[in-house]
Image (cartoon, rainbow, N blue to C red; front, side, top):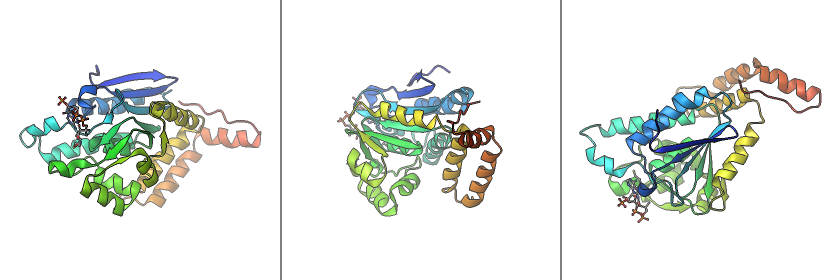
Length: 261
Ligand code: COA
């Protein structure tokens, strides 16, 4: 696929995916969403050496300022509201379930679908100028790309309810205080911090990382017994070459040498 709205570059086996519609504050239109799903489903899994993915926005004003409001004019003619929400939810689920770390480098507005996108990532780094919010009620809609679910998971029901009902936009420090942002860094350092974290994770067992991601995610799957899921994922990790290498390295008092394969 030729990407039009995403700019994808690789450094040291880390993919940097930049939402590249700066004039529209990187708003997520349907083409961008399609490209994002294609990247995570088709391109990224083929790259065995990939350590992880960083998502960021072009320019210094926005990460992603939301779903593309201009496309809402076609709603309920080309696609129903429910269909649109399902499409966004499914796309972000692919990111949440990606077996390697996905880090949002939030370099400006992360509003509506942009905040929901950041929340689907495993870790969020906020630049000091980042702004988070779910302002959908201003438009007569509600968060529909997983926001009513993941915001509750990250900040708790009371604060999630307040943020969604008031449409308040919060700064990076408040997002950090609430647990929405993992770290706050000076503006412009978001990708560097995300890279540092992915490089650290890349020294660990890839099997254990993939098993950890799916096991933590299982906590939020309503029909799944998380403890059972964890036991199965633990079992999977014990059957891996990584387990053998990790334990042998410990006994031999050396650093484990894990291989992505
Ligand atoms: N969808 C489509 N276009 C968007 C957009 C969105 N979510 N957010 C911003 N844009 C576009 C604007 O329409 C404008 O385009 P134009 O120059 O062709 O008119 C351009 O990006 C710049 O935005 P502008 O509103 O002029 O910048 P600002 O600095 O005055 O305000 C925001 C910035 C983020 C506060 C404001 O753009 C905004 O409220 N955006 C919508 C946020 C939102 O509700 N997101 C949830 C959607 S479900």
